[in-house]
Structures are given as structure tokens and as C-alpha cells.
Length: 291
Ligand SMILES: NC(=O)C1=CN([C@@H]2O[C@H](COP(=O)(O)OP(=O)(O)OC[C@H]3O[C@@H](n4cnc5c(N)ncnc54)[C@H](OP(=O)(O)O)[C@@H]3O)[C@@H](O)[C@H]2O)[C@@H](O)CC1
Ligand SMILES: Nc1ncnc2c1ncn2[C@@H]1O[C@H](COP(=O)(O)OP(=O)(O)O)[C@@H](O)[C@H]1O
Ligand SMILES: [Mg+2]
Image (cartoon, rainbow, N blue to C red; front, side, top):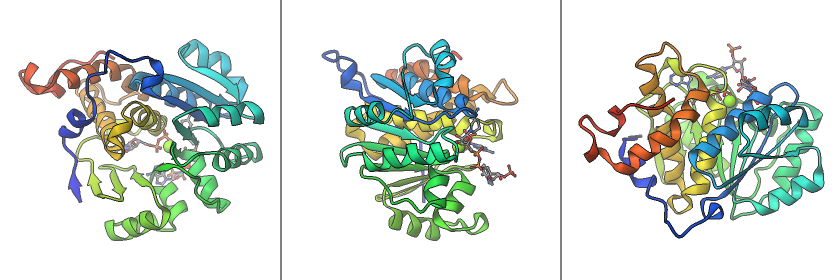
């Protein structure tokens, strides 16, 4: 297993081409946020927007619409129970993030089945939270697309059948190969299982053990995959690294890190990476963050 380094940020977060428009940087659809877990999809969508996705739409329970718009007017919103609207959005985006706050009710399952039946091989599909649990409990086949699973250890137990205490590299790698796609196994020192090897995140801390931290990561992964398409899987690795690098910065002054602070800090963090380590005395991750 190879430790990720800051270099992954330099490799992926490059200067935007000036001859461009919002479509250049990818269209993301985030599906989740039922009547109970609206905060999850708001956090994920905020992370996707702040990570630089060109155009972001949320499909959720409309009870969350006002809150979403009040927090994030950059995002558009559709009703996740409106089949026609959902199909149209699924057809028009590059990247789909499904699961944050989706819940495990009948309605959640129906929405997930619609998503899984209508993705395309060219799309990136980030499968998080409730979507992983529903996939496991209802034995749903994986959808078409470049798949990125982002389970925490219990979600990985549900999906892979490997008990948490047995989640070691060889078993996890075998389960990833069977499943296809990339697996971001979230834990202290998150592990990323890919078709091209296994990586370990050497940074991050217990200050991140706050509800919504994974929802934020899922949105960041979606945003990075949409914007940095050519980077492929490297974009996933960069999102995972940036998420905890920002958290470590904030944790220098705070006992806990709020997930929303990570999203807020993202644009300035990415600018520092773009400028490169040479412009800073103690490395670009040593600079001040706005959050
Ligand atoms: N503000 C919002 O709207 C928020 C909405 N959210 C949304 O809620 C939905 C459900 O997601 P979930 O992760 O909260 O619940 P679930 O999948 O049942 O897992 C919890 C169970 O697994 C166990 N467990 C063992 N190891 C673990 C580990 N390493 N990491 C985590 N858990 C671990 C754990 O053990 P326990 O804590 O009881 O000891 C417990 O028994 C999902 O859609 C998500 O997006 C949340 O993001 C919160 C903020
Ligand atoms: N002790 C810890 N050390 C490092 N990272 C942690 C720790 N606890 C939680 N995290 C990170 O926080 C996130 C938690 O994800 P998840 O459980 O899905 O949160 P939620 O569903 O509440 O948004 C993951 O990225 C995980 O790696
Ligand atoms: Mg989660």
C-alpha cells in the first residue's frame, strides 16, 4: 500500500484554461437528502460547487429546497420523486453523486433504482452513504459508469461482507476487484482501492469525526471528477487528500472541524495548490486558509 503525498494535489489541480465556460468544468447531479437528512445533500452539493464543478443540480425531497437555496443559490434543484425530471438530469450530466442523506425508505430505494438503471458507461458515479447500504441490503447490481464507492467501515462491511475487524488489505482488494470501480474505505487513515493499486491517506485526525464529514467528501470527489476529467482516478485521490489536508489546517486552531468549513476553505486551498509550493516559505499546505 502506497502513502499518498501532497504531490497528488499538484498533479491534479491545474490552472483552468481561459478558453472555457461552466460546461468545461463538468455537470454534477447529486441525489439524496430525504425529509430527515437534508443537511447531508446540502453539504455534499456545497462541496461540489466549491470544488469547482461547473454546474450543480440537486435531486432531493423538496422539503429541503428553501434551505438548499438559502445556503447555496449556485445549485439548481429538482424533486427526486419526479421521474421525468430525474431521467432528464441523469441523461445530461457528467458525474452523479448518489446517497448522501438518501435514507433507506421505500422512496429512497425507488429513487436509487431509477438512478442505477439510467447511468451511462461514460459517466462517473459516486456511490455514498445510504446508497451503499441500500445496494447491500437489496442486492442491487452495480450501475454502468466509472464507479467510486465511498463507504465508512460499517457500510463496507454491509457491501463487501467483510467484518470491520477483518478489513485488511488483501481481503479489501479482492472485494474491490469483484465489485469493480474504486473503493474509498473511509477510516482513520483512509484506504483507496483502485484497479491500479492501493493507496493510504497518511493525514487527517479525530477532529474530523463529525457527522457530515463523509457527505462533504462525496461532494468533493464528485466535483473533482467532473472538473478534472482527464485525471481519471487521480482526481479521486486528490479529493481525498485535499479533504484531510484542509481539515488538518483547521484543526491546528480548533478542537473539531466542521464539514462546512472544509467546503468553505476549498477555493482558497485550491488556489494555493495552483500557485505551487515554491511561492510559500513552509510549503503550500502551511499557508493560511480562509474558512
Ligand atoms: N446532517 C445530515 O443530514 C447527516 C446525514 N447523514 C446521512 O445519514 C445516512 C446514514 O449514515 P450513517 O453513517 O449516519 O448511518 P449508518 O450507515 O447506519 O452507519 C452508522 C452505523 O455504523 C456503525 N459504524 C461502525 N463503524 C463505523 C464507522 N467507521 N463510521 C461510521 N459508522 C460506523 C455505527 O456505530 P455506532 O455509532 O452506533 O457505534 C452505526 O451503528 C446517510 O445517508 C448519511 O449521508 C450522516 O452523514 C450524518 C449527517
Ligand atoms: N478519527 C478519524 N481520523 C481521520 N478521519 C476521520 C476520523 N473519523 C472520521 N474521519 C473522516 O470523516 C469522514 C466520515 O465519513 P462518514 O462516516 O461517511 O460521515 P457522514 O456520513 O456523517 O458524512 C471520512 O472521510 C473519515 O475518513
Ligand atoms: Mg457517510
